[in-house]
Image (tube, rainbow, N blue to C red; front, side, top):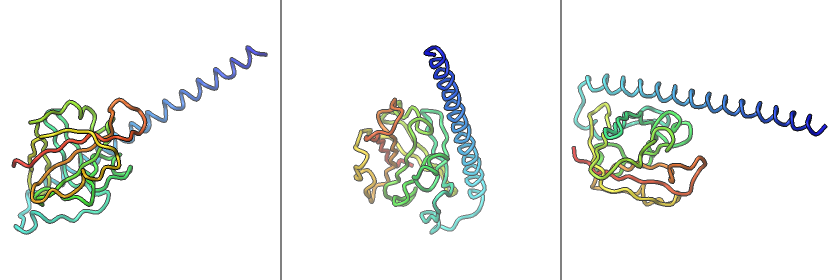
Length: 196
């Protein structure tokens, strides 16, 4: 009787384990497909709109809705190109790097705040160092930023989204510590100043 119970529990646990692995695999596949799709859209948007003439006043005005593809974040030191999506809810973060909507975008001389998951788009962020460059490609040009500081804050610390006018600062944020599998109460912050 006891042996049958152990056998039944073992089969049940094995089935549950296979189910969880299957679900995780499906989730990873789906997320990768969404990121690839957003990246293709971002590249098409950047290339198409760059070829169209722009009026001078349009260069610093943007109009994006939540979920829109904004541009591309290029991280040369990690050999990564990532789509930037308007908004930082889970739906947007599944597709790429999220732009915190209350902050600005390139050429607006203020803070640009981008967030991403540490286990997907912002994997290996801890390898970046002062002096590394970050680039944002948009329909009106490519903007270059140089990292000058990295630090850790509590998740509810809103100072990292405050205005930096007249300085244009690109801020990247992801969960910390990097190796945790569940949610954390700290955020790893990278600040970079506009150099081009």
